[in-house]
Image 1: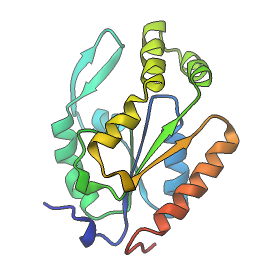
Image 2: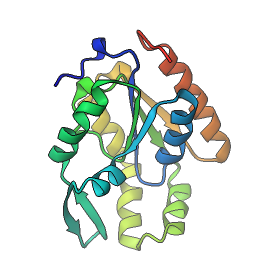
Image 3: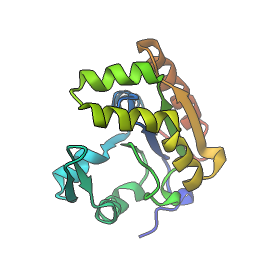
Length: 178
Protein backbone atom coordinates (compact mmCIF):
# COMPACT_ATOMS: atom_id res chain seq x y z
CA UNK A 1 0.00 0.00 0.00
CA UNK A 2 1.36 3.41 -0.91
CA UNK A 3 1.37 6.31 1.49
CA UNK A 4 2.07 8.92 -1.14
CA UNK A 5 2.18 12.49 0.14
CA UNK A 6 0.03 13.62 -2.79
CA UNK A 7 -2.83 11.29 -1.84
CA UNK A 8 -3.09 12.50 1.79
CA UNK A 9 -5.25 15.41 2.91
CA UNK A 10 -3.36 15.75 6.18
CA UNK A 11 0.40 15.51 6.60
CA UNK A 12 2.35 13.00 8.64
CA UNK A 13 4.92 14.41 11.02
CA UNK A 14 7.97 12.72 12.52
CA UNK A 15 9.38 14.07 15.78
CA UNK A 16 12.77 12.63 16.69
CA UNK A 17 15.54 13.28 19.18
CA UNK A 18 17.68 11.69 21.81
CA UNK A 19 15.68 10.25 24.74
CA UNK A 20 14.86 13.08 27.14
CA UNK A 21 14.58 15.87 24.56
CA UNK A 22 10.80 16.19 24.96
CA UNK A 23 9.49 14.26 21.93
CA UNK A 24 6.51 12.69 23.61
CA UNK A 25 5.48 15.81 25.55
CA UNK A 26 5.54 17.93 22.40
CA UNK A 27 3.97 15.21 20.23
CA UNK A 28 1.00 14.83 22.57
CA UNK A 29 0.39 18.58 22.75
CA UNK A 30 0.67 19.02 18.99
CA UNK A 31 -1.56 16.03 18.28
CA UNK A 32 -4.20 17.43 20.64
CA UNK A 33 -4.13 20.87 18.98
CA UNK A 34 -4.23 19.52 15.41
CA UNK A 35 -6.51 16.55 16.18
CA UNK A 36 -3.83 14.21 14.79
CA UNK A 37 -3.12 10.70 15.99
CA UNK A 38 0.00 10.44 18.19
CA UNK A 39 2.07 7.28 17.73
CA UNK A 40 4.90 6.76 20.22
CA UNK A 41 6.81 4.01 18.40
CA UNK A 42 8.28 2.28 21.45
CA UNK A 43 4.85 1.95 23.06
CA UNK A 44 3.32 0.95 19.71
CA UNK A 45 5.91 -1.83 19.34
CA UNK A 46 5.30 -3.09 22.88
CA UNK A 47 1.51 -3.03 22.49
CA UNK A 48 1.63 -4.86 19.15
CA UNK A 49 4.28 -7.46 20.06
CA UNK A 50 6.81 -5.99 17.63
CA UNK A 51 9.85 -6.40 19.86
CA UNK A 52 12.91 -8.16 18.55
CA UNK A 53 15.10 -8.67 21.61
CA UNK A 54 16.26 -7.33 24.95
CA UNK A 55 19.40 -5.19 25.14
CA UNK A 56 20.92 -6.04 28.52
CA UNK A 57 23.64 -3.41 28.11
CA UNK A 58 21.08 -0.58 27.92
CA UNK A 59 18.27 -2.31 29.82
CA UNK A 60 15.68 -1.86 27.07
CA UNK A 61 13.81 -3.67 24.32
CA UNK A 62 14.96 -3.55 20.72
CA UNK A 63 12.07 -3.14 18.30
CA UNK A 64 11.68 -5.15 15.11
CA UNK A 65 11.87 -2.22 12.69
CA UNK A 66 10.54 -4.17 9.69
CA UNK A 67 7.48 -5.33 11.63
CA UNK A 68 6.87 -1.80 12.95
CA UNK A 69 6.96 -0.38 9.42
CA UNK A 70 4.64 -3.10 8.11
CA UNK A 71 2.16 -2.56 10.96
CA UNK A 72 2.19 1.25 10.60
CA UNK A 73 1.89 1.37 6.79
CA UNK A 74 -1.91 1.44 6.63
CA UNK A 75 -2.20 3.97 9.46
CA UNK A 76 0.22 6.48 7.95
CA UNK A 77 -1.26 6.14 4.46
CA UNK A 78 -4.28 8.20 5.54
CA UNK A 79 -2.20 11.04 7.02
CA UNK A 80 -2.84 13.05 10.16
CA UNK A 81 -0.23 11.24 12.28
CA UNK A 82 2.52 12.44 14.57
CA UNK A 83 5.13 9.72 14.93
CA UNK A 84 7.50 10.03 17.89
CA UNK A 85 10.72 8.02 18.21
CA UNK A 86 14.41 8.45 18.93
CA UNK A 87 15.52 7.07 15.56
CA UNK A 88 14.34 7.70 12.03
CA UNK A 89 16.44 5.88 9.45
CA UNK A 90 14.13 2.89 9.06
CA UNK A 91 10.93 4.78 8.25
CA UNK A 92 10.13 5.19 4.53
CA UNK A 93 10.87 8.71 3.34
CA UNK A 94 7.49 8.90 1.60
CA UNK A 95 5.67 8.76 4.93
CA UNK A 96 6.60 12.20 6.26
CA UNK A 97 5.94 15.77 5.24
CA UNK A 98 8.04 17.19 8.08
CA UNK A 99 10.76 15.83 10.35
CA UNK A 100 11.35 17.80 13.53
CA UNK A 101 14.60 17.05 15.36
CA UNK A 102 14.58 18.09 19.01
CA UNK A 103 17.86 18.99 20.66
CA UNK A 104 18.65 19.66 24.32
CA UNK A 105 21.66 21.09 26.13
CA UNK A 106 23.84 18.21 27.36
CA UNK A 107 23.74 19.22 31.04
CA UNK A 108 19.95 19.50 30.99
CA UNK A 109 19.67 16.20 29.12
CA UNK A 110 21.94 14.49 31.67
CA UNK A 111 19.73 15.70 34.53
CA UNK A 112 16.53 14.58 32.76
CA UNK A 113 17.88 11.09 32.10
CA UNK A 114 19.18 10.79 35.64
CA UNK A 115 15.72 11.78 36.94
CA UNK A 116 14.26 8.96 34.81
CA UNK A 117 16.49 6.49 36.62
CA UNK A 118 18.76 5.68 33.66
CA UNK A 119 22.03 4.04 34.66
CA UNK A 120 25.30 5.87 34.03
CA UNK A 121 26.14 3.85 30.90
CA UNK A 122 22.78 4.63 29.31
CA UNK A 123 23.04 8.31 30.28
CA UNK A 124 26.56 8.57 28.85
CA UNK A 125 25.51 6.87 25.59
CA UNK A 126 22.54 9.23 25.14
CA UNK A 127 24.48 12.38 26.04
CA UNK A 128 27.21 11.37 23.57
CA UNK A 129 24.53 10.81 20.95
CA UNK A 130 23.36 14.37 21.56
CA UNK A 131 26.88 15.82 21.54
CA UNK A 132 27.66 14.23 18.18
CA UNK A 133 24.21 15.11 16.80
CA UNK A 134 23.62 11.51 15.75
CA UNK A 135 19.84 11.89 15.44
CA UNK A 136 20.16 15.05 13.35
CA UNK A 137 22.72 13.38 11.09
CA UNK A 138 20.47 10.33 10.76
CA UNK A 139 17.60 12.58 9.73
CA UNK A 140 19.79 14.37 7.19
CA UNK A 141 20.87 11.02 5.74
CA UNK A 142 17.28 9.75 5.54
CA UNK A 143 15.13 12.73 4.45
CA UNK A 144 15.28 15.72 2.16
CA UNK A 145 16.82 18.75 3.85
CA UNK A 146 13.80 20.97 3.14
CA UNK A 147 11.52 18.94 5.43
CA UNK A 148 13.95 18.76 8.38
CA UNK A 149 13.54 21.35 11.12
CA UNK A 150 15.89 21.54 14.12
CA UNK A 151 14.42 22.83 17.38
CA UNK A 152 16.00 23.37 20.79
CA UNK A 153 13.97 22.14 23.75
CA UNK A 154 15.67 23.05 27.02
CA UNK A 155 13.06 24.71 29.25
CA UNK A 156 9.30 24.62 29.73
CA UNK A 157 8.82 27.78 27.65
CA UNK A 158 10.49 26.01 24.71
CA UNK A 159 7.68 23.44 24.65
CA UNK A 160 4.99 25.99 23.84
CA UNK A 161 7.26 27.86 21.42
CA UNK A 162 8.14 24.64 19.59
CA UNK A 163 4.54 23.42 19.44
CA UNK A 164 3.51 26.78 17.98
CA UNK A 165 6.35 26.70 15.44
CA UNK A 166 5.50 23.13 14.41
CA UNK A 167 1.81 23.96 14.08
CA UNK A 168 2.57 26.91 11.80
CA UNK A 169 4.96 24.81 9.72
CA UNK A 170 2.42 21.98 9.36
CA UNK A 171 -0.39 24.34 8.40
CA UNK A 172 1.76 25.48 5.46
CA UNK A 173 2.10 21.93 4.11
CA UNK A 174 0.55 21.57 0.65
CA UNK A 175 -3.03 20.36 0.84
CA UNK A 176 -3.24 20.69 4.62
CA UNK A 177 -6.84 20.39 5.83
CA UNK A 178 -7.87 20.07 9.42
